Structure formats: C-alpha cells, structure tokens
Length: 111
Image (cartoon, rainbow, N blue to C red):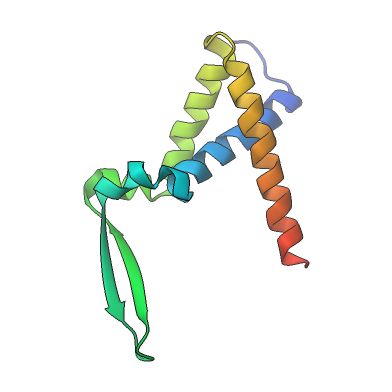
C-alpha cells in the first residue's frame, strides 16, 4: 500500500463518514437495521406518542454505534480504494456525498 497522501486520507475519511451515516442513520438502510432493533411506542406526559428504538443483541448494538460501524466503514473504503478494480469510483462517490453532507450540516446550523 505504501504511504498515503493527505488528499487520499481526506477522500477516504469523507467516504467512510458517508458510509457510516448511511448504515447507522439513513432511512434507505433501515431494512438492514430493522431485524436487529426493537421498536416501542410510548405515550409521553403530554399524551403524544413517541417511538423508541432499542438495539437487540450485539449486532443491534453494533449497527446503532457510529464508532463501531465507522471502523468497519474505514476498512471497507480502504479495501475498495486499494484492492477492488474500479472501487475508487465508489469511494469517490461516497466521499463527495460525505463532503456534501458535512457542508449541509454546517450550513443548516446557520440558516
């Protein structure tokens, strides 16, 4: 693999961030998390229904932890970037989406 440039580190970092967010939080990957989560609906003090999601077992805990998924996402992005033919295109796509997501999060705070 050799040495890594700052640009590659940045690209891999944003790609890993986006993949992690995709797995842990985004609606599009709910199908992956759902078998490992319990959903409870409770009524709060104001009489409103609230949905609580609790992980089931160690897989559920792992899928709900951005630190845990982040390590695996980083490993997957490194593998795609260095070892999978044309994998760098997926890494670049996720990196651009990750950068956009981070910028959107920053700009959303100031609107």
